[in-house]
Length: 143
Image 1 (cartoon, rainbow, N blue to C red):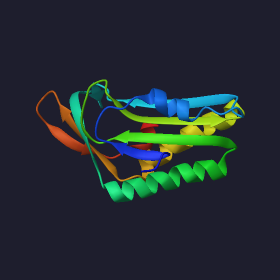
Image 2: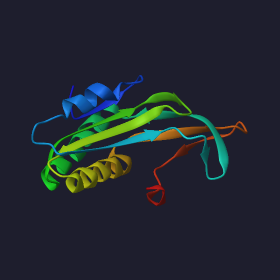
Image 3: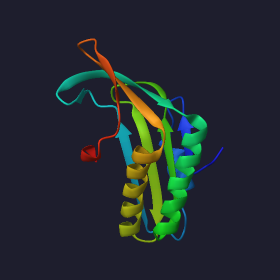
Image 4: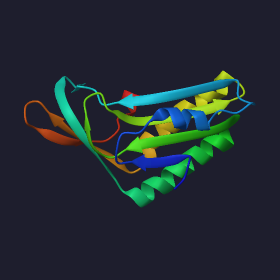
């Protein structure tokens, strides 16, 4: 399994992921945590389910991180995305980037989360308080 992108069926600890990015050349570290929120478009969300096409998701997630490593002046990067049932407040996705300088770390971190949401085949099924449910596709306006 790749160290730079992976799918996780269960909760994961970000401390060892962050520690793996430590490097004497790094002067900056940026991260992003995506959590399950309790609302969407004015509706109360009670939970969600992420479904992934695992083989393709792994390959495309690796490609996104590889592109970030080639495009930005960074030292290393990693991304983990959950799949399965998640509750409100659960960590759904984490991105970490180390770089010599903060500008590159921030830019690469933003690039990775935006590209993962746009390209990696992971679908979100939201459950609402009124009993309804529906599949959601990432909306560019939600960036």
